[in-house]
Image (cartoon, rainbow, N blue to C red; front, top):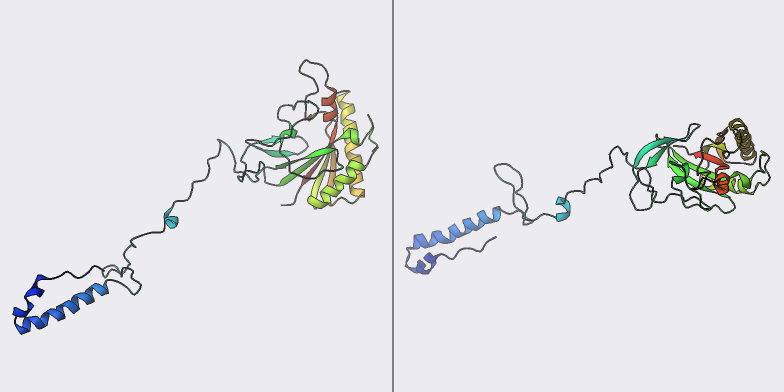
Length: 277
């Protein structure tokens, strides 16, 4: 409250008649009551008699008045992300979907900051499945790698891919070494149990298309049978052969010569693990 104004009439009070002098203290008391009525017990402005609402406070908490930051804009045609693949604290939007055959359709991030690099100086084919990001998972004893993605419906998918040469002799569908499969089962049971698994067999492009299709199907079925008979934690395990229709890397060098490393890289088995929603 503001201090009372000093009235010049107070200096001449002794000369006033007694009646007038007695009124002045009473007027001062009434004025003080009016001023006090303008403040509530806590010192806040009182409600307006006309509206019954409190007058606005003199100051406001900046945190309560600050506007929220608008959401980051998406690239044209993009969908909001579901996962933070590159670890920057933001979910990565997706800009497309891609069909990788045999029912495997995946959302593709607009930018893939932690894409897999091909090995042995091989070069990824355009839109290779292998460009997808992968989680940091211990794959000790597994001759391969793991990719991570989502279906258009948002189902989480992990793809374990390993080289067929670690399992099979050339041209054979009989398992020569079970080490990779045994360790893969351990990874699945620990990290990705209760999903569905599609075993996908692949060959390189040498030989006939029909021969490659048959071999890839036989190898995929052999792996499916091994998984189900050795305790993999999955609700369902199926198999499919894709021959040489879904390469990961080029099988020719830039000079046009055959790439032995590229052919070996494409000879593989993939386990597509779809997790429950």
